[in-house]
Length: 251
Ligand code: 13P
Image (cartoon, rainbow, N blue to C red; front, side, top):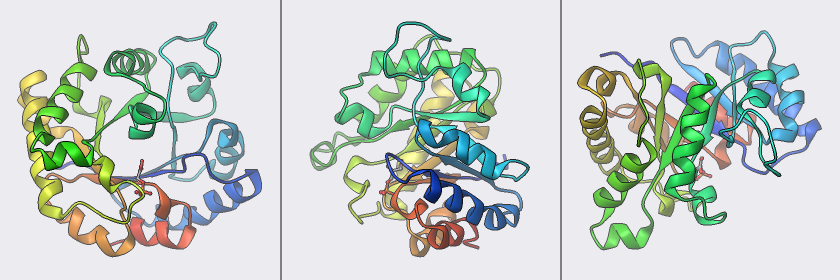
């Protein structure tokens, strides 16, 4: 099945409103010429109104960096799906390694977030990835299977476009050390098979699986050449209009 690639930028806790507005505007031409690709950016929640305004009418999709399961309520520090939707977001990252490792978000919480996002009509980008020690010990597939299965407990989706997976090996995030294309492809095939097992073969063949971790303009083409890599989730290189535009227009 032909999957529409997604090139996503995670701005993390960077930029101010002036820089965010400028960066968003500067990305519009690259996104417009991206053809059959989706381009998404995920600014921090405080920057969303400014960025939403800057990209209005363009092809750029907006996403949240995290999302709560509840529509509203006593959840200090959280952003609800309705709040993201109101600002024009269609997607939200969930389970990013920085949430898991710096803020101790566990699989149960990630499952709740995912369930809430789906219920409210946001497309979750479920992030998974093993730490360096796990890879060294040969535990990569075991860890990824645990992360995927527990995130998807009691979750059902009606079609493959309702959910996106992002494989981000923790040792490759912000380190300049991209996984080799073979390492990434091998994991993506494994995750796709698991999705087939958890849901069904049609969903597995249509679901988009992104790679993230030190993606740069120079590494983009080789990654995208792999059969099961359906796009990328970019951190550092998404904060610069020139480098992210090159990533978007890599081919
Ligand atoms: P880098 O591209 O800076 O390694 O970050 C990847 C990432 O965490 C995207 O979510």
